[in-house]
Length: 568
Image 1: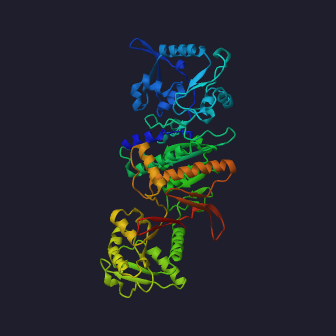
Image 2: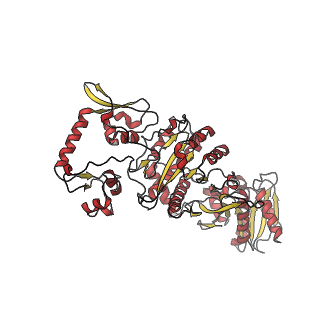
Image 3: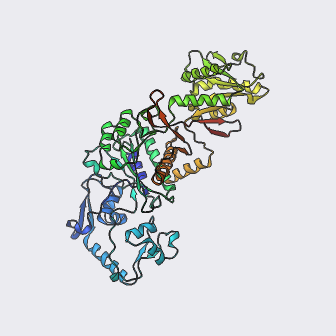
């Protein structure tokens, strides 16, 4: 349940990204009353899936007011829970408000998170008029600031029209494991963290709205959600940070709806059948093959389906609306080998394999050897028993020319069996920089001694992702994550918090560009991810598919401890 609480706390980041539709269909005076301890009270019975934010908006009261009268609600709302509001206090509040208004021009005290745009919309006042009445407000307003809404007394001013939607909404993880009818209710988001301010500057009225759906297995009802659920939650938090950072950018309004797929195909199908999905412009899909297929099948014809979590799925080949953000296996090998051939043009490749040992990179090694032979390049092979020793280098002269060692396994244990011998050979060489090693994506996870060893060996590896701990952007993002959510990001490859931040930035900016130009961008450079999307075309039939990422990173670990990132 701790993960559920954490997700709900993260989910209420107040965005201009709408996650649920609330309508103002009731007010306190429409509620039934009852006498509680001799005091007349309005009461409201909570329905399944309702949140404090949604109920407060529905009844026309502030969230703080709701909690003041119902302190037990601070831990969240439950189905059939009753909320009470004093009848007399509501009437007194109205009288006091009227009396205060008669004392002079109508005013509004700015609350935390409010914007000039939202206040103008709330009172149905042209924003230009609001700026004229409050000189200097065009540069922004602050909490506690009193704004003049009209130079006239309230009797001469038309009663402000109620706004049917909030100035900003809340990203709400949706529990889709209910019947399709019940699933139309917004899921709880009441005990979640509230940033308090709209995170995206409201767009000009003529710009369209763009809608995004996240369909991911948060496992909200699981007692023990597990590591996978925690990683998806972290991804979601990273996306919230991206929205926070983009709050002042101009452009189309981007609405987010977040759904819990519960790692179930049936849940995914129920989500895709929800009426609001017909308006989705982009859908982030879960990793399961069948769940991803259900998203693609149920997506609107012109919606983009973003496959970020299933590396091996090839739906992009036959579905023009699918984007595979990971470079697929075959293009990855081809690009990595191309990078190797260019980088080590004047080096002698020496392949290392342990007799009876794992050979998890044998397919890559075989393709690299084939390319070397095709280009007439020489190479050597060394097989060793148990551990690589100095005598295994017989016939290899490090002083005769530069050498690049290529192991046939990417595991840390196999690296440990070759590192010492290659290091000693490098130390004996007249030109130590002429003895280097080629490595694999798994080495991105190396820390402490192993990390120092690949730096000392001047290693270069290929990887889909890389996050440099010394990069100022990465450090700043990690600190912001820690400050906002109270925890560090989980150490993983890719780091899901950074991935969420990168993808959040990409899709918010991308959808705004699409709204303005009609084109969704295909290139993006993030803290950890690189995107260079290209259209798939079947070589035999010429049929066009979706987009896939062809960008691959070469990571160069240098002896001085610095790291160079090269995008191929």
